[in-house]
Amino acid sequence: MTLSEIGVAVVGTGFGQKIHIPGFQIHHQTKLVAVQHRDRPKAEAIAQTHGIPHACQTVEEIVALPEVQAVSVTTPPFLHYEQAKTVLNAGKHLLLEKPTALSLAEAEELQNLAQSKGLVAALDFEFRFVPTWMRLAELLAEDFVGQKRLLKVDWLVSGRADANRPWNWYARKDQGGGALGALGSHTFDYLRWLFGPATRLCGSLSTTIPTRPDPITGEPKPVDSDDTCRIWLDLADGTPVQITLSTVTFQGRGHWVEVYGDRGTLILGSDHQTDYVHGFKLWAAPAGQSLQEVEIPDRLAFPQTYPDGRLAPFLRVVDSWVRAIAQESSPMPTLADGVYSQRLIDRTHESHQKGGWVGL
View 1: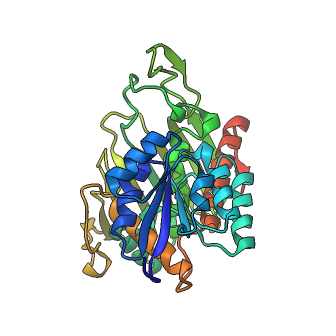
View 2: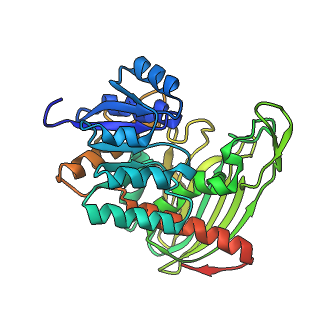
């Protein structure tokens, strides 16, 4: 391992094995040295498959390895707080999957811990690094739409539309399951990145599939996490925002962001149902004119794409994280961005329970 390489470990092997492990093996400044799974034989099998030197059963084992300088936590959200805290207390840099934690208090504690120890902690919010989204951000910065009148987000996919899909942690609200955590965490982050913070929120959550079959017995088990969300925001500049999220819409329209202003309109969208990065296109229209597709400049393009569209933007997240660890730049997005997203997740639950608007 050269001085320019950072020794990285991956905690969790679901999404971790699909994206994080190949990503760290591709990136030129990371060396994947360890992987964790709660079942040691599985950890050993995964390590052997991917040529990873160390297979660990616990996060404590991971952080005890001297060659590990940074850790990526890719487990379900109910494990994030304790695992991330162990990583940070051991003095290791942190890359954390979304949603950040199970509550705002947990997220803020992690942020404070990282700051107190001078560690780089980043969130894997990939949309900031997708070329089409980056071009949207540029056009907004150029004031293409002028004074904003309405923002509209639809993210309607069919990943959990089959009621026979087996029950797991995703069905449990207390473990961070549901569309709000999976999709809303991204949505809240990119809305703030593109348009600034919100000042108040109103949310309504639905569980339209109330039971799912137990993966072992096949018996129906109750679901209390949301699968459909309707959320309204007011931005600091007064712009109204309408958000509809669902993971149970057969032939849903996909993921769309519509921006309407007094000078023009921008629409970004993809109807892809299985890969939430591939397929985005951007259209623009000055006021009174027809929408035209926007060409994305080569300077924003990925140097390489992969069958799984999430891998290319993940590599850009890793690059930002690594540069920050090397003190070459500030990471983006940071744990502070994860705290903001978590705050809006918590407030959405609060609004749903109260049945009205809540301040942020």
